[in-house]
Length: 343
Image 1 (cartoon, helix red, strand yellow):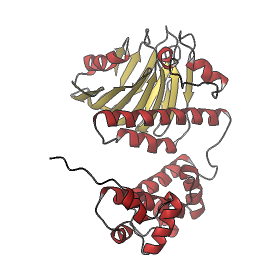
Image 2 (spheres, rainbow, N blue to C red; image 1 turned 90 degrees about the vertical axis):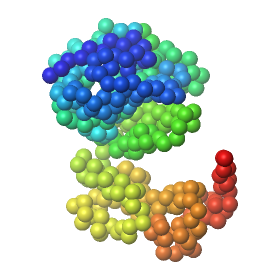
Image 3 (cartoon, helix red, strand yellow; image 1 turned 60 degrees about the vertical axis):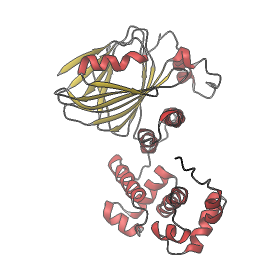
Image 4 (tube, helix red, strand yellow; image 1 turned 135 degrees about the horizontal axis):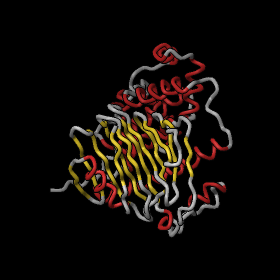
């Protein structure tokens, strides 16, 4: 087992600290710093992006080849951290504790430590981990005029305003598959330069909001649906991802139930919990979103789009498209500004 001390005194220093400890090469582009590692310690990447008002995003996609514990010394740089585990698992504890607590796939972790405290993040050998870490430097964040904390409960408000780092706080979230979609969209942002940073910043604030909502629900005792266990909810999410990837397939509830091994009632409960839609409503939603994307980005005509996404009736497609978006497919197509060809 390798124990690595990280004693960064600023957000800018974090990637340099990682490079010093685990090696790799650093590249930079438009405020995004990337450490790429491929050696006998680890393989993968760590991305750091800085936004205004003390918000920093760290995306880790890494496999360590032996158990690695990062011993993080808060020093003067002691942010409030919101972590979501998209893939794999890791363990966390404060230095004053003996027991580590496991953070599994699709679970969240919120924590901040006292100035003199130490944080331990433990990554297991050969486990591929993809995590989304949002770090908030509280003194800088509170200068943001829109940082209204009145809607937070007492404990979270105290944590956000603890600019002298006098308190210790940790919240281990339950399974949260809804957040996975937002985190994946953030990690897969395709645009470049300023547009990319602006899109990612907006998504970061959405994810912070979801962390806060999840914390509030859990402290109020809002449970997961009682009809499904964690593994079953994960199967429901996998089905949702399959439908998004191939919307034109002729899905039906009976076949999806047989494929997943879940009853039709459990499938409906799972889709309502994860997507606030029945299975049929979700399939229709995915197809309409796919149709809108095709109308915006391709030269396909309406009939071609209809059949590409799995509908058989153009009139039915036009009807539900207008119900969802307020315009017909033809009207939507006409609203799209033609691309300007640059010589």
